[in-house]
Length: 355
Image 1 (cartoon, rainbow, N blue to C red):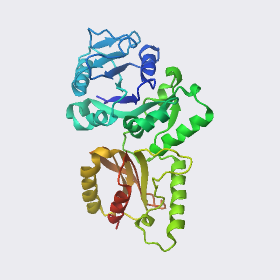
Image 2: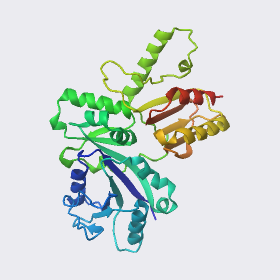
Image 3: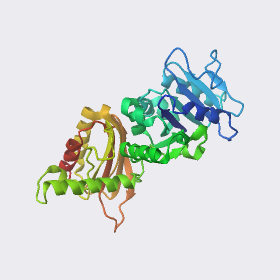
Image 4: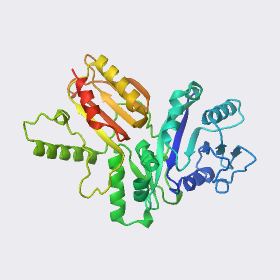
């Protein structure tokens, strides 16, 4: 039986997650979706909005969707849902998990890789983060949780864009791209968002498409040029070993220094497989809790195929990708999104693993 795709819906308090969920739970869209409210308190603050009956844990809506409130363990809830589905008691094709507004999506995402029972029945499709355009700048400044939610995103949906000016919206989008350059940005005003932007985005699939915002890469190259101007052509500074390395100092016009940030390692030399495996293992052991998302396409010495890997915190997976084409330029590219990561240590360490 095919695995059930799961979408994690996150976003800061008041971002508009519940408005979006309300639409999913009531609209005649033809999808049979189980929506799990991941509430770990005594009271579910969205009860009255999502017409949830506090005496029941699972409610089936008139459009075939299911609303399930979790006040305990998420693994248990997912197992119960899959058991009821197998028994023919519930009918659904996919699951949406709404996290609380102050939640770190990381542990929820790790559930799908750490628990065998869950991994047997479910496949994590992606993390969707709803961002309140009118308050996001202040929230990103004040709350690390808001930055984490952006850093984990496979796609971001902006709400309340009618409350900001075009200049404010452009500044917010630029900041979101600096924090997470791999997540496309869409809109979800008043809960109106195409389900195509939420489902089947394959954010956790291992494939050889590493989407990084092109403006981010151009910015990296621009900053790298400035480093060369500052240090001089013959400088032996270790950062010059990395093409397009993204410095994290504040630029004029940025005005914000975020703890969650992204950078990219690129090289046109192959990795020594044994050295790389040993070094990445130690990296994840030490810095795993601060590594939100990371993904890479690797060129390993002697390998005819690309190696694709990605991870969430300390949980990592890898697989063989497509064959290197005869005339294709071989190389490695890895994007890291994390909290106050020691960028130069990571880049230097990866360089030491090259042949």
